[in-house]
Image (cartoon, rainbow, N blue to C red; front, top):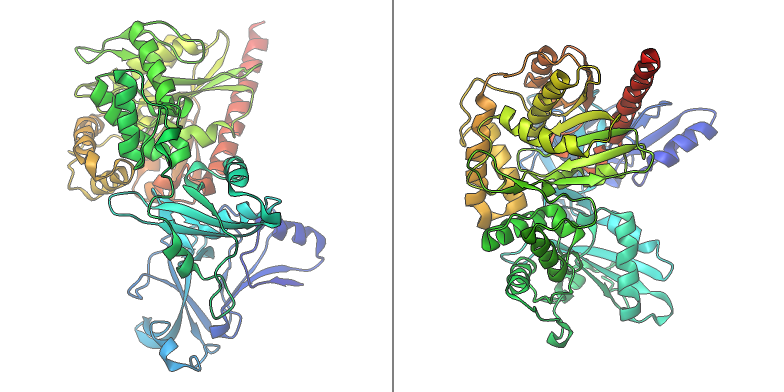
Length: 591
């Protein structure tokens, strides 16, 4: 029998241990203040632990409760602080002043009992109520809607051969997004200029973009507090006001009006002056900030660009070239198309909104359609997880930020399908997928495709897809408030009018009744518990009789987050390989 405790248990290590140990393997949790052990979990072979190995349930004569900041119990599935009770609870610290706000009185089942606030983030897993551990509250932060464990960034930095110690903090400045700042000490007196860039490049290969520190400061020694630990408070005070500043001599000035406008928008977004050769992402830029940037540049230059353009052309000079090339109508070498057409009086739209990832020897094309807020870049981390035998097309909303757009979801579907069809090679299987609002567009596209290509129908993937409603959607509805609040995390207060205008334009389209008959093709449906509880699964079962449903243990906005993306990628791969097998069988029978 093996017990693990004292720190978060790595899933791979846990199941490797389970293979080697003849008896049981347990993941135990407990602070010293509750006499070492509070909860325990016995590992089971073959279990998938999307959020890490659970810490289980309270042991005998102990209690483990998930509470909010006011020590009220929260529902199953909601994150909160772990508060422990029971016979093992200590009377308090030797210094009574330290008891304040740690040893507290809480109400459990109508009785007031003594308890200890652990300061750890946990939740009850919706499927079975087991406790999942998410790290320390004081070492866990939220940046641009993403929950980040600072220790994970530190561990990544420590894998570099020259780094001997690493600490990561959050810098918050008025009027700017919070950002990560890392401090490291290096061995052998390595110079700052020689190590900062290799460290940054290493992290880019290991971590998602939102976890890359805006600045990596190399220091001679870490400050130490009276307890012999790194003094994080001292490091926080030492953060420079603007560590990204530099000599103006290093700037390459703009050469024309377009480059000048783009440099000014970069400077406004990043909070530091940039030249035409400076990369947006080297100065703290990220995908959510890029969404705001493209909105401002598109409005200022009266020319539509996309987040994908910034990702592929992150300097003002390169982005200016993209705009110049599209304006002249010249087709560039690469994966973007430059044709132009109109949609019923709306602005000219180029099919450059389709981001094509072409793979050699591909046999099937997967189309992934943006959610309510139009950013196809939400699928970027999913692309690398999809099998190399699939081409992938990411669809960015070309109408986002425009005054006009499709008047119905069916019209939207026809518009997209017209351009998508041109990118699908002859004989390829087609899988149309959509997240949230994009699921409705994908559904209509799949229905249209089936009518046009009955012998080779498309398959459908719904990623926690929205549903049609007969009720009018208003901005004051709870669900609407949640969507708008999420969008404000992406676009910030300065773009509030843009967010509200877009919501007012798109939300009414979901009030229409289903325009297509039942979709008789195959459909993979990945749904969150909250959406299923709201009746979404029942609604889609009616629309798609051949629905294969998988439940995701996460919230709607976390479907494509790091914790769930591996599961989503695996399920999509399995579904698409099954589609290829069916196409092979169909081809054989025709022969």
